[in-house]
Picture (cartoon, rainbow, N blue to C red):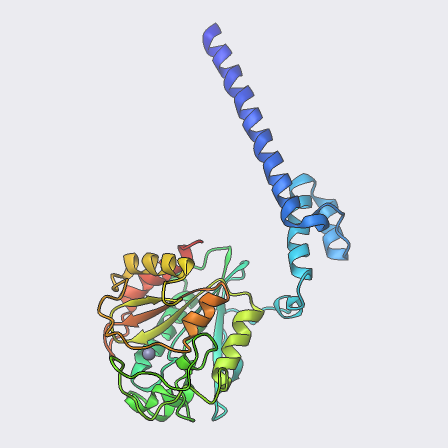
Length: 319
Ligand SMILES: [Zn+2]
């Protein structure tokens, strides 16, 4: 009995010391992250309310968020009320004036985006898939974790989607620009078509971000400090990670997680070796966003069973 009592006391002491150590580390780290702001008392009315209600932990955590938020002018955008969950809201318009409709689920600090039909027309099954994932989220078949805000944009290229449904011509927008070649990283006015799908009438746009669809998505991704994105394409049953010539490490990590969940091929060893210029995922990776292209198996199937698993992996993935 005596020995077990001594052991218990020992464990208690060790437990207390470990707890105290964790508290000190958390407190110091929070203060270091927030620089001087975390050390001073909160200033605004809402912050003061939180601070007086709760002692130590809330005191350190609340100012950390306040400091990072107030540091940049984008606060105005991120702090405006969130759009109603599961209801369409527009982030801009296409060349033909069609709205670019998005849906929000969850309200956590880590922001993720899923994009369908950046190539409209014959990649319309990617829009069908994103709408099906939206319905899964609406009826809670899939639940967004507390720390995540997820945005779905089923059709980034509504001109190509509606004007040339299920036809190759619908790959570009109404100005025959390939929206996935209009981004500023590795942009070129033209590209070597060897190994590419041959769509000769498409261009990369007059200059990077010449197209309203690319501008609207760029501004949304930056204003909302998006952490990671999936852009759906068809049809290679494969995943491409942002960053060239070597994949960006975060995008590579995300691609591996999605490949493990979906069995889509990564790295895409079936890539015919097309020259990829001005792509969304390469631009996103350069902004620190983990970004991948996910290619469905063909131009008809929605691959919903596969991509329910992929979405769960996307929501569970952390840097
Ligand atoms: Zn595509």
